[in-house]
Length: 135
Image (tube, rainbow, N blue to C red):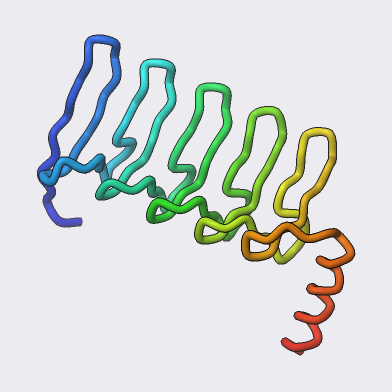
């Protein structure tokens, strides 16, 4: 990693903000914003970003995964809320090729492909068609 210049702003309420020389929120070594309530945000060059885990962690345990400013997680849900709700996002689009893209705490499921809401039957048909094409 190259040497980078950053500034740190520390506020009387305990908030800490790191910025790069262009003034963008930025910290390649950890969170760029730490809020007094415990929320932490990872930013790189002005975009929410963390390749090694959630870019935003909330005091209640909720987590949001971002890459280059877009909700994104190829290995699981990109939004995990403390109440159990999960959302799958890829490149800023609600999307899950393996099942529901949104699962609510009460078990309700929503199927999304490339940011389009579809029914479970439409999802099964889409999945079957995709399977046939790729085999």
